[in-house]
Amino acid sequence: MKAVAVTPGKPNSVHLEEIPRPKLADVPGGKGVLVRVLKVGVDATDREINEALYGNAPPGDSYLVLGHESFGVVEEVGPNVKRVKKGDYVTATVRRPGGSIYDLIGTNDMTSEETYYERGINLRHGFLTEYFVDEEEYIVRVPKGLKHLHVLMEPMSCAAKAVYQAFEAQRRMRVWRPQRAFVMGVGQIGLLTALVLRLRGIEVYCFARSKRGTLNSQIAEGFEAHYVSTNETPLDQVVKQVGKADLIIEASGNSAVAFDSMRALGHNGVLVWVSITGADLKHEVSSDKINID
Image (tube, rainbow, N blue to C red):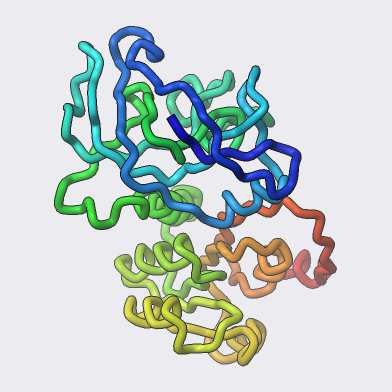
């Protein structure tokens, strides 16, 4: 069967690769789920892997199948699969366990090891192919009424986790009620994060370079968030007008924006970096000012 793959370490190597069709028997214990792929999202992570900024092939292979935002339909299940059945719409989680204590208790994306395993990203093949097989544990059933959202399930999980973990960290404060949040970037994760925050009743400012009027700015304003073009109104000016943020979610994909966001964070606030940046950009920050604040 066909798959879209890259040769890790070789820039702009995306190509069609012929690979064996997976079988239920590839997963031991009768817990395998065979999925026919219907849609796969492609985002900046895939672009950067194709640019050879990061990503490694599974052991024994010279290629890495791309795709981490999956949506498909179950074709077949093993005899010990209980939660999904043939015909169910599903997506799949991305991170796979390593050897740390956090991996062993099922919190794979909290691994304490430098080596990590992610389908379509690092050391595990992705979903940008015709079929894939995975263990039932990593398959998430999608209600039929939500199938039109298909590949947005995976980025929404990133957005929801970012906000959830911020609140988890702030439980040490006993009382933490953020009133104002800044979201840096209005890609899919930035927009979905804005939606999560608005549903919590938090005032949200979405920052991006583009002027108002783009589709993404319209979506942000449709969530009743404030859209700010940083080419027209710099971050510092917004801070002077409305104050610093209690919570900042950095989803721009730009490390300079990630570090500069520190200046806009209020006391006892939280800055969550969602971006992955694999290049070698260097950027000066006002380290003394950030430190004393």
